[in-house]
Structure formats: structure tokens, C-alpha cells
Image (cartoon, chains in turn cyan, brown):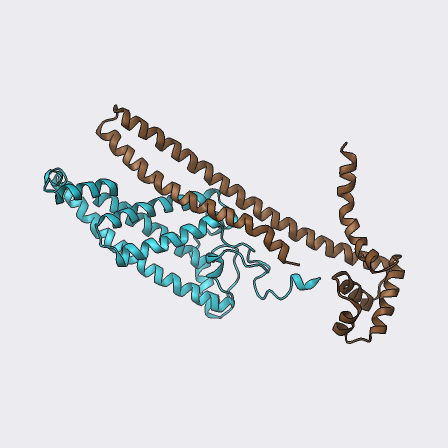
Length: 213
Length: 175
């Protein structure tokens, strides 16, 4: 009878059987794809870029709301920002014996908040840069300009103050976007290191959800 | 042992994943639509077109909120089910353990009894325990005697009957 509980290796007792719920998984991979697409592949300022940006805004809103009412390990209370605990976790990682956590580990939690802050920064500055025009409107305006109707450009540039703000937003937008890519690289490295230390594949539960014991 | 359990929960999992995907699509659509409706309202709030768009936006947001709580409920229910199954499994193990103690089985008899409950025949049990067939047969006979059952089938059904009991009495009580 003991064979059903023993032999799962380290962490089986504390790690949840179903670590990430579907909403966390879907938003995680969708945002990852969006960041990679907009950061590396899609032409900045194009309609597709704006489409993706708006989608990220929606995904972020959904995930943050889930942080209040979702299942236990998806909630903010399961991974409060705790820099001191994060440092302790880093030390234990170097010693090769990190503790198991039911949700994000303290270091991962800081990463998550950094991601969310950067995502909010990128999308909101993006909205400032485009006057919060929806991608549909932008596409329509582009079509109009292409057809020879330049009137839309005339009322777009209004006032010096607005221009200055847009320049500042552009600056922040680019810095935040680069920061996001750096964070993503750090995140992947962190997951790899943590997986090795815990001798447990941490990517699988985010991809397919639970694995039957 | 784990196969039916996996079957039971895959359906729920697939359902909640579909619900999550649907929710993401909906909320994305809602953000675009609300953005568009706001822009239209800024341009000319009195137009019937804008009013209708506003109505659709509200409906969309309501359905997003509904889906949101539905998903939460589904995830919660699925986890509760899994917990219950785990508990039931642990409970059965405990029941068997307690009963074996009650019957006064020796450690060797406990092992053999458990293997017999799992459906192994004499040859397989003998193989697993590196024992002679005769030994296992003798152990089984002693187990059946201690349990007061006539044979293997009755021995196995002893615990199943125990599990089915409350349900039968429930059904009997209801009419």
C-alpha cells in the first residue's frame, strides 16, 4: 500500500499534484509568445505589433484578477514579494539544496512581479504612443493614408507638450521592452537551474499541467 | 490502480483548459471592443450605433466575469475530487490494515493477504515472495480461516462489501 505514496522523490509531499491551473498556463505561454513576437520578430509600430500589445493588456488584466480569486497557488498571497526570502533561496540554491515551494519560490516570485511591472509599463507607454487608438483604427488610418487621404496625419500631431510626452513614452517603452527580454532570459535560466537542483522538471507542469503519480 | 483515476480527471482537465482558452479569447475581444466603444462614445455618444456597441460590450464583460468564476469553480471542484479520491484510497488502505490486525495476521500473512487482494494468484505470489507454492497456499488457508471466509472470492468481497454498505443502507432508507 505504501507504493502509491513512496518513490515520488523529493518534493512530492509539498509540491501540489496540479501545480498550475489552466488559466495560469494559458496566460503564461500566451504572454511569452507575445513578448517574443513583439520584442524580436514583429515590426514595431505596425498594426500587428499594436494588436499583440492590446492582447497582452487583456491577458495581464485577466492574470492579475486571477491573483485575487484563483486557486491557492495562483494567488498573490501564495507568493508575496519578499526580497530577504529571495536572497535566502539564492543561497540555498548555490548550496544545491533549495526548498520546495507550493507556488513560486521567493526568487521566482520577485521575477513574476518584475515581469508584470515591465508588461504594464510596456503596454501603457504603448497606449500613450498610439493615443490609445485601437489596432482597428490604426489599420483604417494607414489604409486611408495609403489611399492618399493625409487628413488623419494632420490632427495626429497636436501640441508640443504631447510630443514631448510621446518621446518620453517611446524611450520608456524601448527600455522596458529590452528589460522584458532580459527578464525572460533570466527566467529561463532560473527555471533550468532550479529544475536541476530539485531534480524535477519544472517546465512540464506549466506545459501539460499535472503528471499522474 | 491509477488508470481509472486518470481517466476520471482528464475530462475535467480538458474542460477547464478549454474554458481557460475561451476566457482568454473573450477577454481579449472585450478589451478591443471596450476600447472601440469608448472611442465611439467620445466621438458621438448619442448615435444608436454607439449605444448598441456599449450594450454588447457590457454583455461581453458580464460573460467574461461569469466564465471567470465558472473556471474558478471548475478548478476548485476538480481539486476537491482528487483530494477525495486520494482520501478514499488512503482510507481503504487503513481499513485493510486495521482489519488485518483485527484478524491477527502475521507480517508474512499480511503481505500474502494484500497480494491476494490485489488479484495475484498463488503462483504469482509465490514468485514474488520467493516461496514455495505450498507455503503460500497454506498461508492463504490460514488467512481465510482467521478472516472467517470460505475462500478467495469471499475474502476479496469482504472489503468491497464494506465499501458498498453505507450506500445500500442509504438507498434503503430513502423511500
